[in-house]
Image 1 (spheres, rainbow, N blue to C red):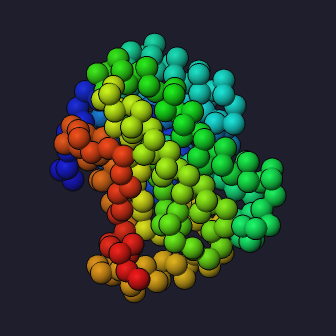
Image 2 (cartoon, one colour; image 1 turned 45 degrees about the vertical axis):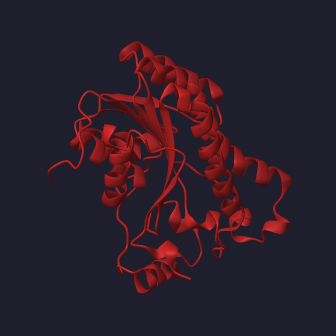
Length: 259
């Protein structure tokens, strides 16, 4: 398939790949097809085994452990990228977590520790990643930072619970980071896909119904794919998106506009 944009000479960090069907897999594929050199992170050795087919198929040489609950691993990845490439042109943050009871239960019943954990992994990790990549993107003369959000940030989605609050905070963080880093020519954007079946989505009760509703109610009557998300992300991190920053960009066949 002919690349939509040109990312030749660019180096990007991709997080959140869990398996072949992950959102981040589609992003990684699109970026590699457009000519980028990518670095992939994994959470632990168990997840490394699941993503090995993606690593091998895309020919990725730089794969590093990065667990956002362990700050030293972020520093290690930053140091490795600096030593290997001397810069970073883009980074994709695609990670979220909440305890099952907090995800499916009432927000009003969320435990303090469950709330803190969900916000730490799903939202503040994006802030920590921005701090880690900032000097690397400065060396590149600017860069692009992308995070993945969802419509549950602004609409009440059944069984989405505390994650809706996390995504709302994540989108606010996108705006603030864009304002703070813009003078360094670092762009910060959020991509908001429609519902699609990933490993993370499989933990949400009734998710099949959300996908069916997306097909029925969206203007284009279609489900988004990882390839669709990858195409939009590749555009945003490319020079074609050089003045696009601070926004939430939907790729959902128009589902978000429907009442």
